[in-house]
Structures are given as structure tokens and as C-alpha cells.
Amino acid sequence: MPLHSFKGIKIGVPNPADLADFYAEIGLQGEGEHWGTRDLPQQIEICESPYRQLREIRLACTDDADLHVTAGRLDALGIACELRAGALLAHDPLNHLDIAIEPGPPVELQQQPARSDNQPGDRARHNARAEVVTEASPRPPRRLGHAVIGTPHIEPTRKLFVEGLGFRLSDAISGLAFFLRCSPDHHNFLIQPGQIPYLNHYAFEHDDVDAVARAATLYLERHPERQIAGPGRHVIGSNVFWYMKDPCGNYFEFFTDMDCIERDDSWQARPDWPLEGNWSIWGDPEPPEVFFQPDDIDEIAAGQREEYGS
Image (cartoon, rainbow, N blue to C red; front, side, top):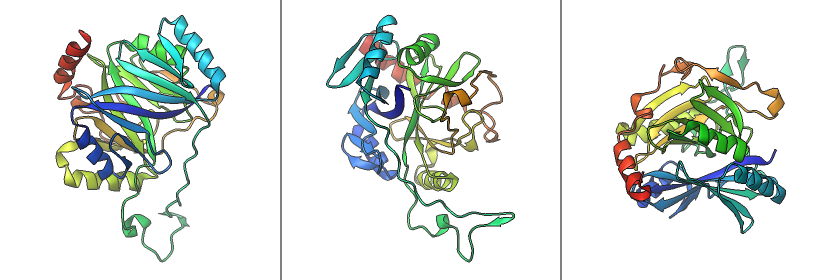
């Protein structure tokens, strides 16, 4: 498959220093404009912008031949693109989003020691307290796993990402929301309805449920007003989730245990998930209103009108 990795994103905010401080607070590594994890040190780039926005996504493919094939598909869709410095650069004019694809091998994450659990009939931890109780500091995020946008241009955006860029469909909600993957993850990019194009959230993968819960708990002890939704486990994708807000107003997710699709022919995509009743199998039964109507949506709309005239 040509696309194999979700490499990272660029986020624009009016106050980049606040976002950098936040990334340091939650355990990312970096400084200034570039942040990431131990295995993926520069997954997130920060830039100054008059309003918060997703400026770019970066993807990885197998080789240079994939770049030329993708360029041909984008050209057929009327999407401008160019090959420059070994990468394919394109622009989504409807969602004001730059896209960069580079060839290279997938990055394998270093495996962390699994925590020992005591379960009925299987007592794996003997004469010791649980690791999450005794560890000196919480386990940091392992990587940026996916990003989600809201857009009024659902079908053209789906067409660009699937027919142009080569994402695969994992699941869809009633033709309105599309869970797309460019790696074995159930989704690396999600398109859902929005009155204007905007960044709905971005998500950091953690080692396990304990890592998600402890990291979120510590963050909310310091910033209780930034709770959005969770904890819970999604139905679509199966991942455990906890959603919060960063200091610039972006929603972010801590997640773990997402469905993994190693072979396309082994997964049956379901295109007709209903609108109701598929948010979680436990936890909050439905997403909060602000998940689809952020408090700053009017500010984002005003910024887009000034920058793009629409």
C-alpha cells in the first residue's frame, strides 16, 4: 500500500508559546516550534496564526514511485500539487489544509514493558503493588495517532483523501462522517460535519488504560475547566478515550487500544453506522454539544473570512 504512516501535523495558534508549554506539561519532548515523543520527536509543528487551525498534515509512503502515482490521482481530481525536495506537496482548498507526503520506512515504536494485571483465574502480579501505583512519574504519550476535522464539504473532502491521497475507509456514519486510515490504525484522519472547516481534535496514543487515566487525571487536577468528555470506550475504533482542551482551545484526546487493521482484506468496513448510539460502549453515552460546536467557532469563522474571504 502506498501510504503507510501518519507522520504529523502543523497547528497554527495565536499564542504558540502557550501550546509549547502545554506539550512540555503532558510529557512531549521538544522545544520552540517542534514537539513529539521519544520515538517520533517532531510529529507536531507549531506556527503563529490569527486563529487556531490545522495548517498541515504530513504522511509517509513507500517510495518515489508512490509520489508520482498520487500526483496523477490528485491531478485527475483537479487538486494542485508539486514534487519538491523529494516530497509531494498539495493543498486542500476547501479546508485550507496543506498536505505533504514523503517516502520512507515506517517507524517502529520501542516496546514498553507491559504492566502485570491480576485477573480472575490469572494472577500475573504476585507480592507487588500495581506499577501505576509505584511508578515515579506517569508514562508519557507514545505518539500522535490521528486528527479530526469538521467541514461542510464532506463528500469533496472524502474524495480527496480516499480517491486522491489513497486513504482507506475503515467505517462511516450514515454518509456524514468517515473514519480513514493510512496505517494499520483504525483511523488516522476523521472527516465529520462542521459549519466551517476547523480542527475538531488531535489524539495522543498511550500505552494502556492506566496511562490514559493517570495522565488525564493529573492534567485535570491542574486544569479542571478543560474537561470535554470521558473516560469511555468508543464503539467505532474500539479505543479507550479521554478528551480535554489545550490552552489554545484545541480539543485533544488521550487514547489507547484502538482497532488494528493489518490486512485490508481482513476488515469489513461498515458504511452505515447510525447517527445515534455509537459514541461509546461505556462512559459518556453521547458526545457533548461543544464537541461539534466549539465555543470559539465564531472566532474561527471570522478569521477564515478575513484570511480567505469566505
